[in-house]
Length: 253
Image 1 (cartoon, helix red, strand yellow):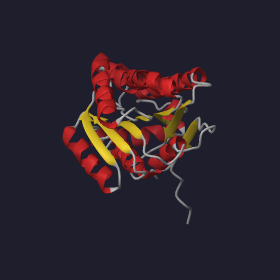
Image 2 (cartoon, one colour; image 1 turned 30 degrees about the vertical axis):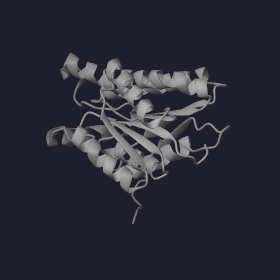
Image 3 (tube, helix red, strand yellow; image 1 turned 120 degrees about the vertical axis):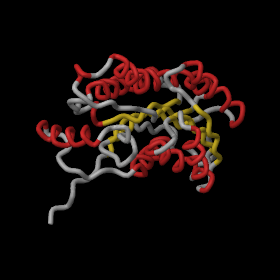
């Protein structure tokens, strides 16, 4: 797309990948609406966006609640203008043997990782289609391609959102609106900050049995942000359907 200022929404913008995406888009001189649950952390992201040349608009957002989404998008459009870009980044993972997870934990994953992005996309797509331009990005995980045991709910939701994104690509043909999936490998963030050290140790010893987590190099959130920027700034007529970003294995001595 052209380099003029655009309005972008980034969900899960409180930290990590969402924060990096918001700052990277802000560095283009864009107006960035920051959505998340932690108001203090959103304010920190807003400061970084402003420092890098963007205009930030932090507001609390619950992506599992259609009323919260509607109020958020309405306010963003009123204050900043029509939404040109939506980056669905908010997500959670609750590790553990499937039969030990509480129904409420599984529901939380489903509502945050699968229903949430669908509700957010549904809310912005109508106006985008009317204007004949726009980008919707779904930040996914390599668990959609290679499910991780003891992360069944997370893997299932990421596979589900990728299927939804592929169906949406077909529905959007000829509208000028693009849907892109950015599939992410292991990334150094506070994503797993709520996990206990015992849970982390268990997973790190368990996954290699299945050919998963063969090395311990990780991406930086900025690596993912570059992929998102590439997708949404590609010129009209170019559709970046799927980008997978993985950490390179350590160089052998």
